[in-house]
Image 1 (tube, rainbow, N blue to C red):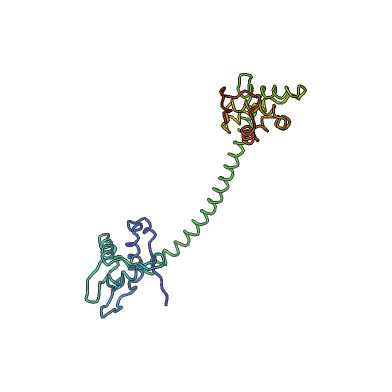
Image 2: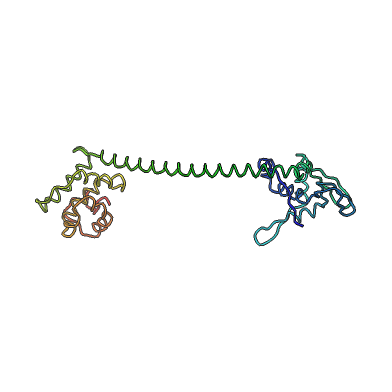
Length: 274
């Protein structure tokens, strides 16, 4: 007939919880100890809470799998763990000819049926109440977290919009000046070109410098270059387009022959800062 045994929850806070070998040994002794007086093993009459076993057998009982093989503790390791349990007054031992007789101290306190029944009833009621409370709290916490996340996202979105509206570039800003410069380059080829939103152009140039880490000289050079290239002068007509094709334009500059655009570094070398 299958039986069960009880373990106090306080064991999770005990000193042996983090000592894997000692913990396993203690659980083994509780589980294997006799649950009533008068049981005879190898001619020895055991009392409730006692277990007769050799250290070698205990090592076999506590063997464990590692990889594809099975390992087991040495008898010296088992003896050290037993000493720990004795020092913490969890078990006692007595050597006999048939093996070591282990006694789980306070076994009756752990395993008495009446106490178990009382704890089971109280524990069930408490656990049901606790589970219900946890479920409610969990739902509330999840809802609160979701609301907080939505509020944060809304705030960030508002801040982004707010910051976007606040970005106004005056004529002393390098972003504004480059935007005007590009428009002037375009008007060389098409004097009737519609005047763009200089503020929007300035913001795209800001992104090139702050986010893409382009230099002012690189941007200014490409603005001149694209308006002198027969193909690109009609395809790159805004900083947004210039930003999108920046890398490919650099490669095209490097592959082409020197143009009439003055190099960034004035020397005999073909060097445009890219």
